[in-house]
Amino acid sequence: MNHAISHDVTVLRDVTVLGSTGSIGQNTLDVIARHPDRFVVHALSAHSNMQKLAEQAAQHQAACVVVPDVLAAQNFDSAWALRNTSAKKPEVRVGAQALVDTAAESRGQIVMAAIVGAAGLPAALAAAQAGKRVLLANKEALVAAGSFFMQAVIDNQAELLPIDSEHNAIFQCLPRFDRQTQVNPSSQHNKGVTRVILTASGGPFRQHAPALLEHVTPDQACAHPNWRMGRKISVDSATMLNKGLEIIEAHWLFAMPAEQIDVVIHPQSIVHSMVEYSDGSVLAQMGNPDMRTPIAYGLGFPDRINAGVSPLNLAAVGKLEFEAVDFDRYPCLQLAYQALKSGQTACVVLNAANEIAVQAFLMHQLGYLDISKVVAHSLDWQAGQGWSIPSSIDDVLMIDQAVRTFAQETCLKYLKS
Image (cartoon, rainbow, N blue to C red):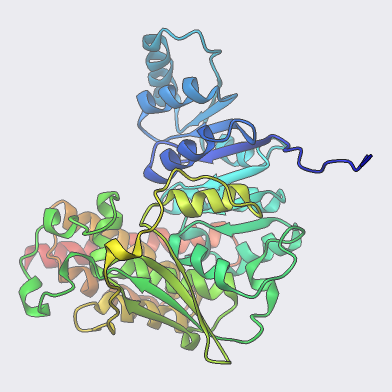
């Protein structure tokens, strides 16, 4: 008789979802709901959509929620009361420090860092410093603070899993190592890797001549052909500034120099990224364009778990196309390479100036082609400021705020002209 002990017992893991009402947060909760035997929701956070947060907290029986201020807390209480639910009301925590404390507390072994913008950086860093498994969907953590964020991951033996579909694909295609004891992509020394290749859809203007983009409207820029995303990131996809941010992220995640990070246009968004090896091999990760795939990979790692995503039918896709990037059509991508080569400070500037420029464009206060000009002016301005390399969140936020002020003034000059 075989008395071998089974090791297939699954331990429930607490998950904290920072930015739960956004698209990444909603998809994360969708995957979690498919695996009640694996995951339990500990905490949720949201900035403004209190009705959605109350709905999520009730459905997933969250122990606590984090909101930005007292007014938001009152709105959450009202939304909860209107639900007339028998579910236990979660603890309501208020403020930026509460967000940081929640990310770092002992419960919530897995932290989905999905808050957009610089506001998500302190909590993501706190989760890394607490040695958590950090599912990183916040670009600013690496774009603005890559050097000390990655050091925090290493020093505190945190597990870092990228959730951007491109970086998640690269992670899956890199050399194998003992990922069950250490999930730290930059630690594997990239044995035999000669290049990482990020794929990009090219956005809605892939076939437009650059001269025809002058009068592009926000609605046109937000009409992404493959992905359903928020308006800001949709504009970033159209300008390919988002791909530029991903180049910077790849540099920090995988310890790759800018010269070994390439971008190729792939309009079908089926190949999510590739890794090239010294023997001539290229490994690619493919799948339908659905963010639940990389989210499920991060939640379940090292196991593969059901994400609710339909299987890829290559015969139905028919063909996979690849094109070189035209920098005349996508000047923001070239600016990102420039920022990465200039250093961490320039990367903070790139991100902050772009956020201001895109916001102005979405408000019809800036032309589409002027987005890259505002970013370029901001980078030129920063080069003469004499700022040192940021080594703390305070340094990053100081530079970030100064750049935003300059970029806003620059946008006004374009508006007046």
